[in-house]
Amino acid sequence: MNVVYLEYEEAKRKYQRAVNNLNELTDKKELLFLKTQPKGISYDKDKVQGSGDGNVLESYVISLEELEPKIKYARRLVNDRQRVLELAKINLTKSEEIDDVIYVKRYFERKKVRKISLEISYSEVQIYRILGQIRRSREK
Image (cartoon, rainbow, N blue to C red):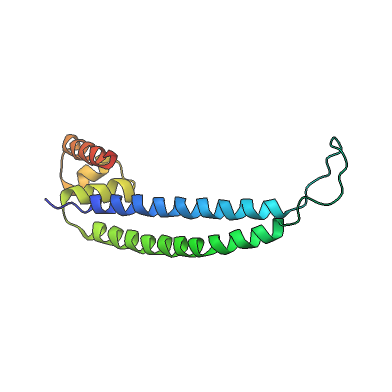
């Protein structure tokens, strides 16, 4: 019994990890940019000549040059993972394995167990049993 929904679930997890990684890198880029923005004047400190922000822009550019290749790679990875996920979904919808058919009807088409039961001529109890197996395997 070779169920395809497990491959789909794995592809979905990897895609989500890639998206999370891209979000983290984008957040770092945003924080770098925010460090370059002017700040308010603090009147509770002693007045000192010179600005302490002399190298902020320079360090921003250096950090950005280090971060940009990582962001580009993360974007490519997200796009690749998305293609793999789409292919896994296509394979899953074409599968004739009963677990895959029930998975597609329940999670993609959002059908009720009663409706699935009528469509595939399985009892509701059997469909609930299969959905329980699917749920347990998804949690692993």
